[in-house]
Image 1: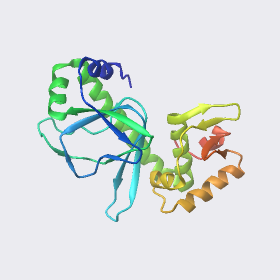
Image 2: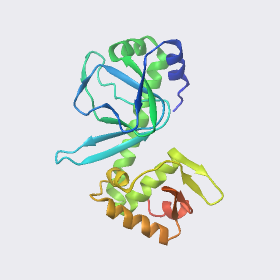
Image 3: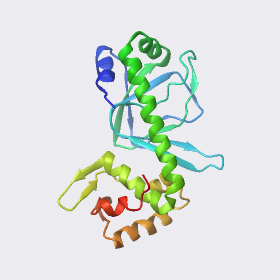
Amino acid sequence: MDHHVLQEYLTAHQFPVVKKTYKKYLTYEGIQDSYVYILKNGVIKTSVISKDGRQFNLRYINQLEIVSLLKDEYSQYIDAPFNIRIESPEAELYRIDRVQFWKDINRSMDLQLYVKDYYRVRLLHNMKKLQQMLMNGKFGAVCSQLYEFQELFGVPTEEGILIDFVVTNEEIARFCGITTASSVSRMLQQLREMNAICIENHKILIRDLEKIKENIIF
């Protein structure tokens, strides 16, 4: 998705920037908010809470992007659709009055096209995520999540692709709908025995991406 239109819009306005530190929440699911937030820098995580109280992680976001869904353009206050938590030491987000944001979108064809593309990409991501959850099984879901992590945080090294971001087994479990972190630990051990991954300084190094992909139904 081409972000230059969004960046030009932000550059042309002096929107306030909110700074949050590690593990602080920007929004809570179901709590009313009157703003649209756009990530400027840092890493954030979106998640939802199930009826039985379990947390399910949706995405990590680490680049310029709208991080709160827009919903309709007429309501001043809306219920936040998910939790947004800071996962990097610090993150900065533009905060824009949501009604004003919609007015600006309606005045700009470029912004309208950007928002349509934003929804299209998010819909495709959600459909892909659902497909992987339903078709891959738990082991395949973990492999699928590792593949997504290397796309977001991967750094090529001589040994393979380093996921340059610390992700705990508990967080992986929450991305994959797995009940316990110990189950994820067993699956990662299986991948280590396959020589597909290793752990370096609490970070996952993918040594053989093809072995990861063999367990994923794309």
